[in-house]
Image 1: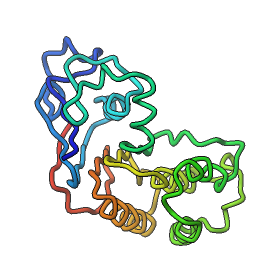
Image 2: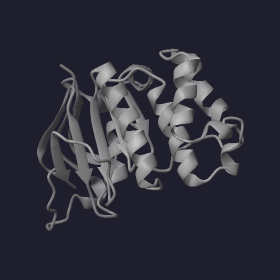
Image 3: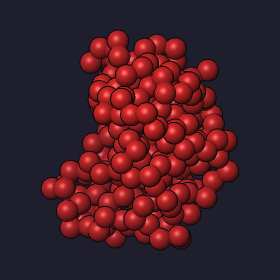
Image 4: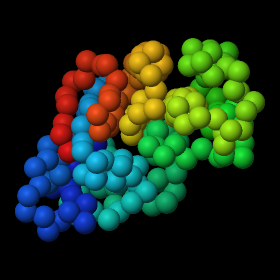
Length: 214
């Protein structure tokens, strides 16, 4: 079974703090296949850092992080490329879309690599999320909430064992939050994946298997 394990992990910047009270930092925590986790955090507690550590973008932490019982600090660049294409997908808090490209062009970059969904599925997501009329609009001409929905679609256009969502509904109203939740849960269930979502307040209305405080 797939799993992510953090063993006595803590960001370097927090390593000397004596007042840390966290369910994750400096603990032994596992994220198991097929389960749903919510990580609740205050601003500045390392929420986005955690996502970057797990995704292999940053290594400025102490302790150990394991993916399927392997220490991720030992992974090569080529192995990380494979992991990001087949095992871990992420919705970044800052989205990281290409502003000069259209919404659909941003999706196509990943869709052409994997083709795990046909065009009708992707168009149905655009329609359900209320951005069908924005398919050919440049990202930098869209609102942040619209961009957030595009970034979600992109994250779902690949195979994954773990789906990391960093504040996925921070700029969505309740209706679009519920629609996004339903799309996410359907795809997570289809792929038998683990869901890890972060929040500093507003979070998706899901029956999480475990809620952790950062």
